[in-house]
Length: 204
Image (tube, rainbow, N blue to C red):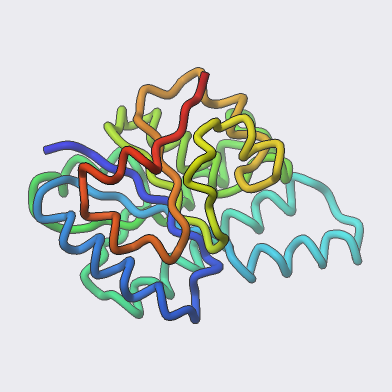
């Protein structure tokens, strides 16, 4: 089956849309392998605030931000127990073709600061791209809690506007996945494989 990486923003926590997305992901998992990458959400925002207040290093903030993704992953599991946690992406293949949606708890990245830049240019957006490239995923979906202009298809414009992090551009050269971007309210279109083309990003 095809492999899809789905970056689900931590900002969806507490929203009405979160359960809709989790249900849509469960349905898709019957026909393809799915790994959810959680965003840091408010946990990451708190780290940004505390770094400015206490003036600590980018490396420390980066590691804390990775842990914020782990916190979101556990909360998503609370809402949706069928999500199977994987702590090392190399283990993902063990659960393929079982109709079981996975969620990446990225503790492994705490020891890989030399491979991934440790600064705020790299957020869960870039880390979902990193995972998609590493696992040769067929598709990468970015779910954002903002309104997406469906007439805008160029990745570079989303990066310029700050919708997608700056680090994404530096990692795109390793990517072979088809990339799509959805607003959090677009869950009804997620299962429509024809209409998804209107959400596809052009990376060149």
